[in-house]
Image (cartoon, rainbow, N blue to C red):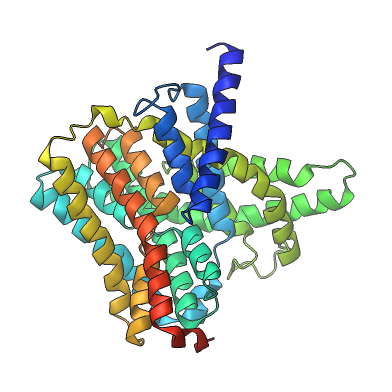
Length: 405
C-alpha cells in the first residue's frame, strides 16, 4: 500500500469513528456501538470503501492492548474486600452461568464443535466495567450499596475473563483442549501476574524519579507506552494473549493495587498514578476507536446467509442465555428485590470486553461468519438494552436512592 493511501484510510477511520460515536452518544447509546457501526458502514457489509489491511490491523492491536491497560489501571482490587462476599457471589455466578449456558447452547443444542462452543461461552462471560460505571454514574447511583456490589463484582469478573481469554487463546493456537494446555496457561498466567506487578511497580518508581528530574516534556506517556508494549511482548512470549500484558501493566500501576509482599518497595503514589491516567487517556482514546472500527470492517454481513434459520435461532438463544445468566447473578444474593434486579441488569452489558472475545475467536479462525455475526449482534443488544432497563427500574423504585453506603 502506498503511504498516501494508508494516510487517507486512517483519516477516514478516525473521522468516521468520531462522528458515529458522537451520534451514538446523542442517542444515549454507548460510543463503542457507534464506532462499531462506523466500521460496518465503511467496510464490505455496506459501502465497501475500506478493507482491514495489515497496517490498520497492527494499529488496532495496539489499541486493544492500550484499552486493556486502561481497564487494568481503573481496576480497584480493594473494592472486592470492601463489598465482601456478595460481590464475589455475583461475579462467580455472573461468570459461570453465562459460560456454562452459552457452551451448552452451542455444543448440545446446535451441535457446534467443542472449541467453538467454549469460545461462545467465554464471550458471554464478559461484563464491561466502563459501560457499567458510566450508567451508574449517569443515574447517580455509583456510591449506593448496589452500585458498590456491582463494581466489586465487575472487577473480579474482568480478572476471571482475562484468565479465561488466555486459556481460550492457548486452545486456539494449540489445536484443541487438553489438561496439559490448561496447566501450562495457568502456570504462565500465575507466574506473569506474580512477577509483572512487582516489575511494573519498580519501573514506575524509576519513571517517576526521572520525570521529576527531566525538563523535556512527554516522558511519562513515552515511558508508559513503552512499558505496556514490553509487557504485551512478554505476555506473548510466555504463551498468553498480548492484551493480557496490557491489563497486567495497568493493574500494577493502579492507585489501588495491593502488593502483599511489596511493603518495602518504593512504589508510585496515588497522585503519580492519577498523573499516568491523565496523560495516557488521550493516547488510549486515539487508538481504541481504530480497534472497534476494525471489528466492524472485519464483519462482512453480506457473506451471512440471512435466509438461514440458524443465524436467527442461534442469536436469539444466545441473547436469552446472555441476559438470563447475568440476571441470575443478581437474584441469588440477599438484597431487596429491586436491588437484585438492578445488580443483575447492570452486569449484562458486554461492550468492548465482549467484542475483544469475539474478535479473538474470529482472528483465530474459530468463528465462522454466521457465528461471528450472531455474537456481535448479541453483544450489541446486551450493551444497548440494559441502560434503558436500569432507567425504568430506578424510576420504578425511587427509594433505592436513599440506600447510600
